[in-house]
Image (cartoon, rainbow, N blue to C red; front, side, top):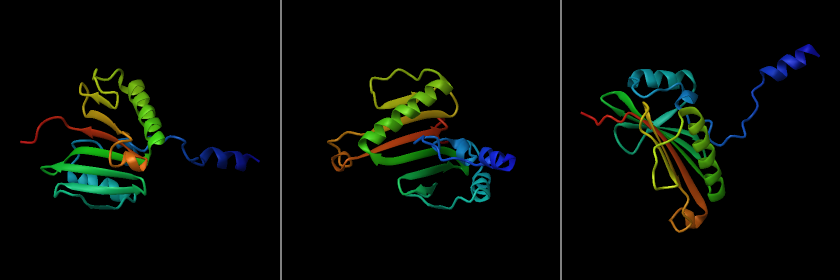
Length: 158
């Protein structure tokens, strides 16, 4: 009986959260890490990467509907971009979940006119959350929404 209780307490249960994976800590990454340290952390944790659209990018295919894009500048990790591709209602729910998480963690975001963008530019790294869930857009007309969460170094490349 005790062994069963210990087993249940030690077992990881799937999360109901759609966005808990969209955090640098989930991949043991941080903006500013060297490229070699980034690759080492990913390799240690079993993540495979492929080349991105640009020479300074690597992509982690997290799942059929999830992707992580890493952008480097001068061999330093400058940006970590998490992308979630889901049906429109799920995209809105995920946006609200991430917005609430960041508000709880970082406080109030910068005031913006847009209701589909959340920006934290008073912290390092900066954090931007963007929801693309317009039913009139190319993806939206197919019923798909996209949630992007980007952690990035705000300093312009030199």
